[in-house]
Image 1 (spheres, rainbow, N blue to C red):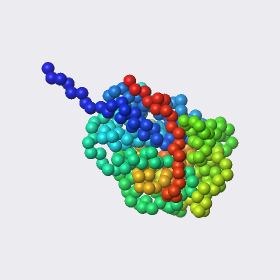
Image 2 (cartoon, one colour):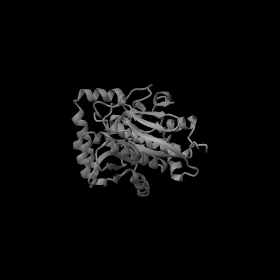
Image 3 (spheres, rainbow, N blue to C red):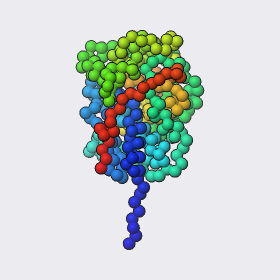
Image 4 (tube, rainbow, N blue to C red):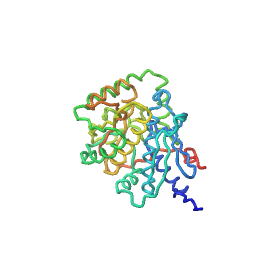
Length: 329
């Protein structure tokens, strides 16, 4: 009788390190709506329904996109630790919050691009301030196109003359929510608080004058008066749109994975980014954005891509303790 060979599996410290990096992924309002379960052989990603925004995200679309970003972050972290990941997405129709199951195989020589993007995870941040124009964007977007292709998505850099229309769409999206008191209360709950392990701290928000120069930014509660990057009279970031072919949970999950790939590749290339989701919260806005992108599909996220001054310090936004997001069996 032959002895059965047990396939190699990353040990618990490696899993914890990868999850720690993976949880640096961006999420809507920094809600971090994910849970991870490692049973010693496979890793599962679950959406946490208790952390879905009931007013801004009643369908859970943005929560799934956030989980998709964490999934790609985690896979990138495992690649840097020389583990190849095989993902089964939505493995159990009877458990819709189970978004992915991950298996492992040794990966002695991961591509240099994976290592670059893994190194960028801790440096990536959401830049809500005005930016200078990006340098080398065509080359970066060529790489990005190859990264998002496996996720069945399209990424389009909007022409510069589309920005005024997108600014109008942003203003309209904010105006439609101005007198929605439940929406505004939810926004204030998650934004502008300090000394918490989730939500958006005041240091990561833009003042009214800073947001006015960006134009397409979400109207978060302003943290007070400030005029950072006063040398930039306007925002010169370029705007890119991630679009899926359809509107289903799998499409949203893949949109999050592609979003992560774009953000990390931009960071690794010295560019700053800011994902905008308020413009795509309402179906009418998504239809308008599809017209600007000039292709059929469902826009999911707009991404600002530019350059920030190199001498700035960006304190990391808080993350929940690993014990709250990872269960090990």
